[in-house]
Image 1: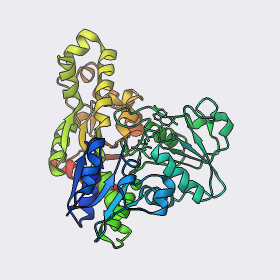
Image 2: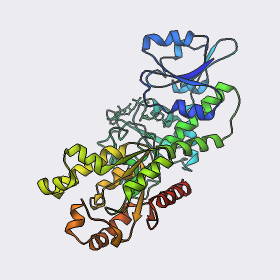
Image 3: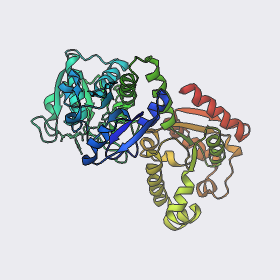
Length: 408
Ligand code: NAP
């Protein structure tokens, strides 16, 4: 019997991994065109399906029964074949989003809730928020309440983003300015890639609690699995799988002075945790087609910094990497969100006297100790944690690994 995900384009789906971690059945991907849906649903070896964009409505006519919640939402994301062969439709996005609201402890009753977007996920978010007693307003680009008259809703307490604005690969875009809402108590962004969308980063800067949609994704899958196997699963499963995926997606970003050991330590660390390693300076050299001393000599430091930001913008969007950065990346504040959106940032500290200067234009022009002093506040502002490299690179990599385990 087969279980899996039905959709049109499924390249980057996390569902197979989540269901594999739940562990009760094999789970595949069924990429189908609209005229192939009926044939798939008629296959008797299909025991259960999740359904994603754009078929959550399209499957309904082929089902023998649709539960009241899925009927109310007009959307089915889970189909189960019963022992008598009939197909039953459910909606577990509702359970996933409800679980997310509860997990993050948002109090919704009598609060004004803005739901951005009017697509499938919006219908689910609106239903949950209304059921929890929220006063919901949907914001649509073309609706009565739109992005031009947001000031009407300056009293909003909660914002839920159900638009794809800010989602990979269009990182860095935000659907609105959170500064317009002085009473905000929490923001839920259904996007989970990047881990911190621009909307979440903007909230972080204002100390507004804000959370991504990974919890919802895992919680809806757990509920779907319960329908598939016909019995409840422990709640702890959601938490365990969420943590595993969150860690797996996180980049480990190494910052510190040129020569502090970032590249060597990064390679060892990547090997130890089975990740890919990327050296931002090596990527920059590839992009420029010349060495770093040549870039400085021919084009100047500004040109170098612009190339560096371009490289970090690309690397920071990716997931699950160990990234060694150039020593001066912290001199540009714009690089912080690029590295922070998906990463934990570790500052590798090393005694200035031990820093080599060969092949490093700025370290050759300036006394490394003076340069280090001037940059210390910048490294401190960028970093989540610090590690002192006063032993072997192997030992420092071990320290970082231990720190990361402790943080996660
Ligand atoms: P959808 O049906 O395409 O709806 C998205 C809505 O966003 C549209 O109806 C549109 O509303 C608005 N929108 C689209 N492009 C926009 C733009 N450039 N600027 C402003 N608004 C825009 O998609 P969906 O299925 O609801 O999914 C929406 C998002 O939620 C996706 O990022 C998806 O990955 C995420 N999601 C996450 C989970 C989870 O488990 N975490 C579950 C479902 C969905 P208007 O035209 O009215 O403005």
